[in-house]
Image (cartoon, rainbow, N blue to C red; front, side, top):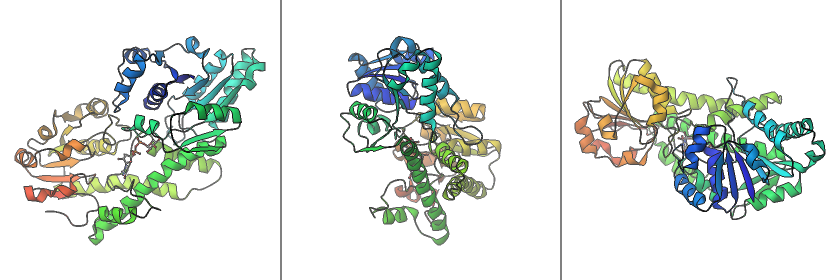
Length: 441
Ligand code: UDX
């Protein structure tokens, strides 16, 4: 099939490359000429495992092209996907300005039958609003008689950064929200080759499924974080609690890792947007404010504990491992690690940080307040404490005896319980995690 993908961010590019891998002809469109030029040369502008290699492959097969000119590719499109940003406004509500502008532009140019798909995460009602805008723009352009040929299908994405391409190719479900049976079939066919159950439903249900999935996962994280805080007070270990409940298939073992809370471009935005949406419909969704509050408090508690333990941070040399919002990504959006680092800097701490992939993005947010080290061990030279904020696998591989020699005080605060099972006290470290109940002194 011929697919036009508008927007080449994490979701648009990964999904575009994914469909090209399935054998479709994909034209990726973006207004950022610099980005399109880099992509055209096979260069992925962000770190997402597997995407770079897959891009080279589909380019060699001639299944993907990049352009800034929508007009030049729209004529052949059977499906047009909109994957532009919908960032949160200060109120928490999704900003749909760019999405609607793209819808107007598509409508201006469209002269044939097509299925539209909004890939961006959007509030209930947005797909219908996009379709209405596309049809309105077609009408304005004198093509009213063609408007019934355009349909919209809501196909939310569930891609995790770090495993996005694998999540696409091995999806656990494909949600297809449509009014029109033929349009739904087209989208089903587009996903041929992905062996996942289809959930065929209304547009509104599909839109809400996306928010429900992310809000539920965020709830799971806030729940286990509450348990962690309790575990600390009663001398229990939250990792064992997670295992003990996670083996019940009704609960499941995933998303039960306690720590400094969730971040990233999706969970914080989507939980707030769902709360906002509920309010707009006159419904008070009681759980969501608590999920958000617990998540925010998790950072506060961790920060307060470490300041108390260190007896203040002003002028103290502190090493930080990890700035990305989670491992295997260079993304620092809404990263709890960045937030905690900023708080430490604001209090005058002398920070040396290391992240395997996110340094460049972190520099934009931390500016000159932080020094960056080339390796994890280097970040710890002369440090009075090490704070682990993102659970990159390589942090477990360092030589802890060498690390101890580099630090002035062998003290580790682990915001992700990432090193909890390494028996660091045997190397002479003082170690504290989140919800581990008893601290190894
Ligand atoms: C999420 C959803 O998983 C994905 O389906 C959706 O489409 C986009 O949003 P992503 O933001 O890439 O994906 O990250 P995810 O792996 O879900 O982690 C989100 C946050 O939760 C991270 O900050 C992570 O550190 C945190 N987390 C996750 C925990 O604190 N504990 C856990 O047990 C799991």
